[in-house]
Image (cartoon, rainbow over all chains, first blue to last red; front, side, top):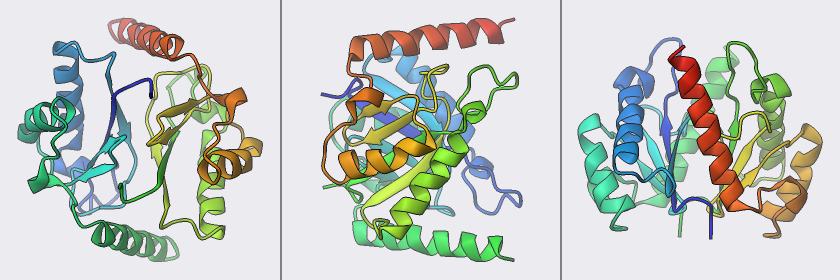
Length: 123
Length: 123
């Protein structure tokens, strides 16, 4: 039994050129909305929220991962946060319209973005 | 079944005053060591590594969380990374000397650090 029933990570990665990164798509507001709702619902002892770096699904953000389920969400706006909390975190039902249901495609997308980032780094 | 067997988060949070934060304690090197070992062992398709912001156990870092287990590690040095990979990620055995086994104490520590951070913010 983990210390927290759920651990929500919100990517707040910022790229120098703002190229489709989560920060440029409003992820800080998504993070703050999660934090505020978890606090106001008195769920802090059960659900932990942490900002994180790139989840590898750059260009699809804001990206959010919910553990222990390992559910990868993309395109999460401030207006989606209440639904993720009520459907997923409280009722255990993945919000399918925002989730990567095809895990092969998810891993492939992450690998492609990693290769792109490395190529860029090498100039 | 999640897309990745394990998802490792390494706190790389940096505080303006460097007050006991993970960055000041070498967490960037811990992150790079995890990434390099996961890559060289050809485990990238199974284990994902992501940097993250404060995990709430400030002052005990470098802090690392391993999901889906929800295992909170503190005081993880570069020299501990191979053990965490071989014991926990490959054999499923928590490295107890680095882990928060008392979850009440963990939650209490996080709540105290959050209160401190908020008091500081309010000046």
